[in-house]
Length: 308
Image 1 (cartoon, one colour):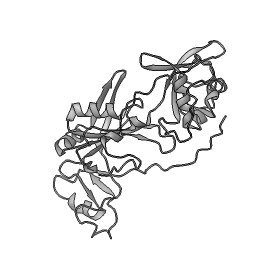
Image 2: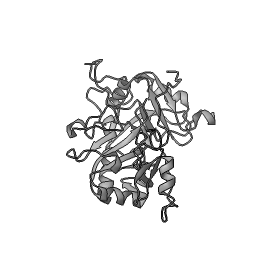
Image 3: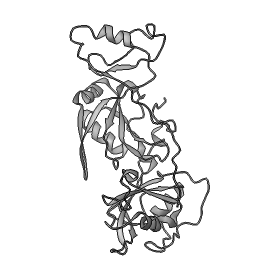
Image 4: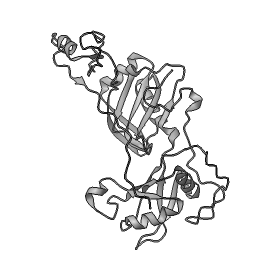
């Protein structure tokens, strides 16, 4: 069995687990003291978290330099927030930011040094008007990116949906449970992450074990994701591959080139080359079908960060 959307994931159910590791470790000197966690540092310690960390509930007057100073003790870090480059602002405009650490171990050390309350973890920051204000730290555990619900099933990309607009706190396990309750038959769910920082991009995929559940999901077109504080309507559509031959001619009419079009209408659900699309969709009842085209895949790129 092979997974088609994440090269470094295996398929045995034991290989993918849902983590509850967002807990402070032993040996912490105190809130915002120097890190004094476990001293058995191992260079080969496996990565467990994205190097990108969400920080929420910031004081309104805290600037980038003060945020950096609050977290620099854990290692080289860059402070970022949406549209930062365009806004030229020194203050996160919506009370949250992201920490981009150079080393994953910095994230582990930060988590172990935080205080925990009601399943959330906190660190204190200081601004000109607020001293030692607790802010929420929300790391992303790499094990939350994939979840196998039924490892007896072979994953079929043609029974897989793309879910757009997935709230970034939502884990693969939670996405699988929500979709399974609605349509049944879920065997796998995955959260799309960026290739460099391995942080959620706001989209996911869900694979079904049967055609009935798959068709029910894509026919709905939209799904309401409800879990805790999350309540969002998101779009659902077929997951389109970019390496499929035309299902109609097998590539004979297009020199064996991969099919550029996929018809998501439940009467088709096939890949087509341009010629076969025109032929099939000139028939009565199919002339209004619209093709889905695979969007360009993200490629790893070097980001010109200057570590502080």
